[in-house]
Image (cartoon, rainbow, N blue to C red):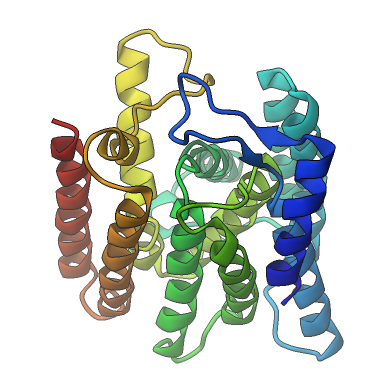
Length: 316
C-alpha cells in the first residue's frame, strides 16, 4: 500500500516539480513522464523490513548492513535523477557500499571458489555484485520491465525456499520487495504514468544482487542463476557487443534485445508480459534445480536464449 499510494502521490508531485524523464534519441518512450517512483519502493521496503524486525521474523545475517547501504545508494541515485552525476560519482559509492557490506558480513563462499584465497573469493563476489547492480539499472528501459523482473526474482526466491528443508530466511525479505514492486507496477505498466528512476533501480539491484549471492552461497547456485536469467543474458551480451565496437558502455542506448523488439513491432506491454511468462517458467525451473540442477540450468538457458533471439528477430 505504501508503494501503491506513494507512487500515486509522486506522479503529481514530481510532475509539479518538473522532475521528468524527457525522451531523447536513446529513449524507448515518446512522452515525458515523472521519474522517481523508486522513492516509494524504497520507503515501502524499509517499512516492510521494519515490521519484520519488530515482529521477530527470521531474517538473514547482514540484512541491516545491506539495507543501510541500499539507502545510501538511493540518496546518491536520487541526486543523479535530479541533477545528473558523472559516471565515477555513481560507481565509486557502489564499490564502497559493496566492499563495506562484504567486510562487515562476508558472504559464504561458493563451492566452486573454495580453493581460492579468501580475498580473491570476496573480490570475485564483489565484482559479480557490482555487475548485477549496474545491469539492473541498464535494463530498466521500457514500461513494466523492471517491476516484472523484480517480481520474478523475489517470488522465485520465495517459491524455491518453500521446497528447501532448512530455508535460509530470505523468503520474508523477498516477499516484502515483491509487494513494493507490485504496487509500483500498477503505475508503471504500459502506458506508464511514472518511471522508477535510478533511485529505484540501483538500490533494487544492490539488494536483489545480495539476496541472489546469498542464495548461491548457501548452496543454491543453479536457482540463483536461473531466476534472473533474462536480465543476465541480455545485459551481458549487449555489454560485450558494445565493448567490441569500442562504445562508451556507461552511456544510455537502445541496443538491448528488448529495446530492439519495441523499436520493431512489439509493444512495451507485450515485451514485459513475455518476460513475465518466461519468468514463471524460470521459477518452475528454479524449483526443479533443487533436484536436477543441470537439467534445470540447460532448460533455463534454452528458454532464455529463445526469448532473447525472438526479441532480436522481432526488430527485423
